[in-house]
Length: 231
Image 1 (tube, helix red, strand yellow):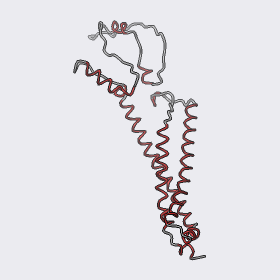
Image 2: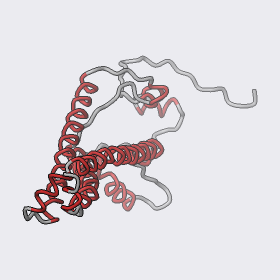
Image 3: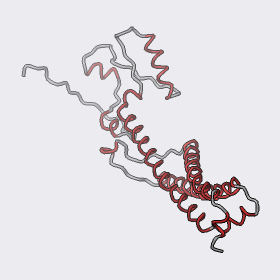
């Protein structure tokens, strides 16, 4: 009873929009600023000004420029990254964790290349001994098994990239409903970048190449006598 009663007024809803971001859709209302000044009894003042820029990633430089033109200590500038800092920090952390997990998956898969080449070396001991007795160098034998391992790695990388590309297309073309109260968004956006495909391919091939070194070295070190001993 001792406090001022809350202000109330009837407004007419002219339209409803959806931004796709649940937090904005539930809390943000666009109203004529003259009506709001009268509603809050603030007079002819504004508490904030929003600016739309052509390059959204240049907001840091633009914000610093605007801040330098304003009275120090009286105004502050906030860009979309600072307003949604918690969200972007969480997304960046999730992306980092997923990248680490996928890298370890590729490393574990590379052990299949190692085991396959080692079994091939044991099975082809006779053939290795024959080509070495005919004058093949250790480096030549090593290059043969590295090449074979890289063929396996290239085929696996190509199939993985193709499968990932097809999965992204399926997700982008289908409507996967998401609970906006949990995920803040009502649909799953898909954005494919060429540089990420390229980085994944390079890392996968580098791991595959590393996995071929030991079996190829072991094949190169195999003495011809050992391969022909039981023949």
